[in-house]
Amino acid sequence: MIEVKQVSKRFGDFTAVRDVSFRVEAGEVYGLLGENGAGKTTTMRMMATILQPTTGDIEISGFSVQRDPVEVRRRIGILFGGDVGLYNRLTARENIAYFGSLYGLEQARLQERIDSLSRMLDMEEFIDRRVGSFSRGMKQKVAIARTLVHDPDVVLLDEPTTGLDVTAANNFRRMVARMQEEGKTILFSSHNMGEINKLCKRVALIHKGSMRFAGTLESMREQYGIHDLDDIFMAVVEGSEN
Ligand SMILES: Nc1ncnc2c1ncn2[C@@H]1O[C@H](COP(=O)(O)OP(=O)(O)OP(=O)(O)O)[C@@H](O)[C@H]1O
Ligand SMILES: [Mg+2]
Image (cartoon, rainbow, N blue to C red; front, side):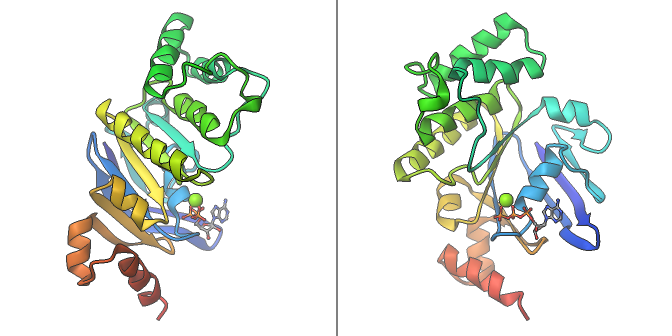
């Protein structure tokens, strides 16, 4: 469960996130929508305790990012889109194991986790090969396994399909479904309404740091009286210019 409670983040005199609140239930795939610069990454970085909120708080499975950051870190996995930053000279298994050891997992437990993730993500053929020669899609599987190695309750996916082709993006969405079957609570950020529509029933829409909407895609259509989700997005973006 993720509970965002009136969170703001200021950088100097610039407010990147303003009074944002929403709640993601356990086992849900929830969408965080917004155009470039909306504040999606900043919000996720606060959830992951990489940044501290200026005001407000976020709870991850009941633990406060302000008061219990260590407990939060144990329960959260984060994956950023774009360059996933792996060690090319290490094998997939070694890359994942390195991360797992940072979380203090014991060797036996760690290898068990890697084998199970390798099965779940169809990585068995290349798990013991060096990642230097991997395709973008293969590297991303390694990055997903790294995100999940400590078996977090909550998974933050920040524009994870950036740079993937259509097939790899589709495969990625299938993996999100598998993560959900495993009981993960997932927050998926995107600026792409179509992608959010395929994955999520409920979304939060932020624009220039402020919440514009939170609820089901159906109620969003009703509220704006527009069916097409891209048109709703444009109405929100343009409506706020004046
Ligand atoms: N460390 C920082 N210092 C100053 N400003 C920052 C910092 N990090 C982010 N910002 C600003 O905060 C705003 C929100 O940025 P953020 O990266 O959260 O947006 P985003 O929704 O993730 O956008 P994108 O879709 O481009 O990834 C932007 O205007 C950005 O320039
Ligand atoms: Mg971002």
